[in-house]
Image (cartoon, rainbow, N blue to C red; front, side, top):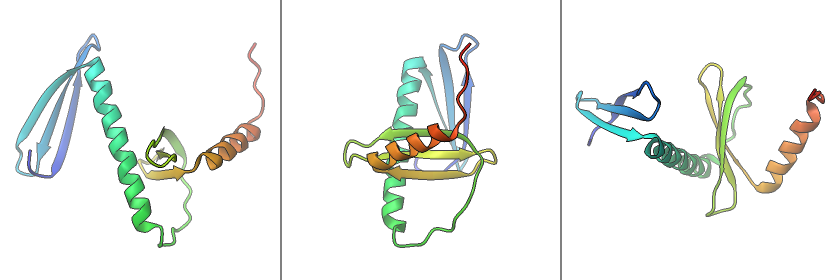
Length: 126
């Protein structure tokens, strides 16, 4: 596929053992592929790695620009360690679909984890 991705469809088999992915470009050309569970997990890992690298490059590009403060209601988060520079990169996803890329040194990750854990009331396990 040479063009820009305009649509992506995903179908999952009834037993959850495989899936079918369909990619459509701006000229409505289709590329389809099927994957078993392990192949799909590897595909997702590759996408996450690419997203982390994109976030890293964007942060380098926009480091000089001042970011406007924003607040989102975080619905999910995904992070991974970047072997090349020792940082943790990831994305926060909001309830409304907004995405915030994150890049933190390990010390900040530890501080943030501690601060979040201390801000949540203790829960009973019984």
